[in-house]
Length: 113
Image (cartoon, rainbow, N blue to C red; front, side, top):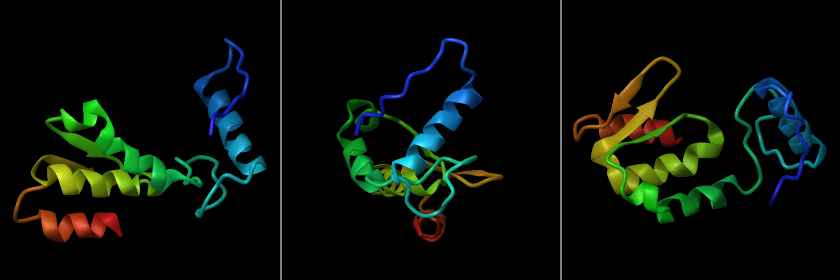
C-alpha cells in the first residue's frame, strides 16, 4: 500500500512522524499494540513485508544483519536467524548481541517471541 501524504520542505522529522502515525490510525492500518504514536508501529501486512526481505539483494549479500526488537520487524528477525544465524546481531533496549553457536538457540528464540 502506498501512502500518499504531502509534506512541506519545512516539515521536521517529528512533523512527518506525526503525519504518518495519524494516517495509520485514521486508516485503521495499525495492529496491536496501539496507539501507534511514539513508536515504530506494528501495521497490517508487516509479516508479509518481512517475508520479502530475504529476496532483496542487499540482504543476501550482507555480512552482518542488525534487526531492532520492534514487533513489525519480527519476521525480519526470523529470516535473519534462518539465513545468517552465526552473523546475526540482535538488539534489545540496552544491548546488541552477536549470536554464536552457544547463545543463538536460547537468546534468539526469546527475541522471536
